[in-house]
Image (cartoon, rainbow, N blue to C red; front, side):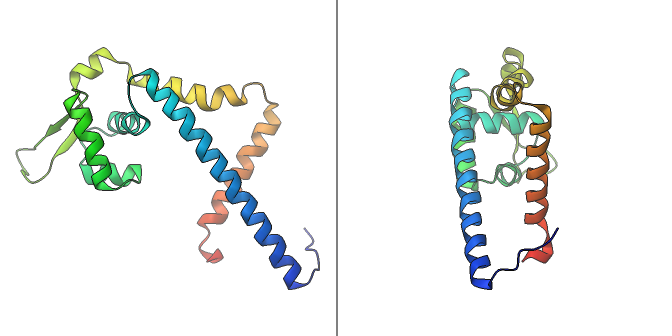
Amino acid sequence: MALKEDSPYQNDELVSKQADEIIEIFKSIKKTLSCKFEKNAKQYGFTAPQLGVIFHLHHMPSITLNELSEHMMLTKSTVSGIVDRLTKQGVVVREIPKDNRRTVKLSISEEFKKNNDICNMKKTFISDLISNGIKNMDPMEVEKIIYGLKQFSLLLNDDNSK
């Protein structure tokens, strides 16, 4: 692939413009995902962060509040408030292991699991969010999107680009 021979100023200006455009696209995607996630959560009587906690605890039962907050990339106090509300609703249980009384393990309550199909809730969310969006697209176009996202992820993770 040949590089265009432009002055450094023109190249910097183009890179800056492209970076701004990428940032705006990600902001738009984030906003759309948040709206759809909130709509989906309301179907089940939860907020989006509450449904996120439910999905995380279903996938990783018996984790600590610190671990959960790290996985969700939210502050410990934010996750603690969400867990408090879900505990009051009987969705989450806190367990103190006998071998380490200083830790608290979080899990989905048996009652909630018995009355709700969490796998189906998650499947519905993913279906509503992504599958419905791409099902009418040309598979080759979807592959291009996947390829582009993978390349961008690699670029961001590349230690040499610091």
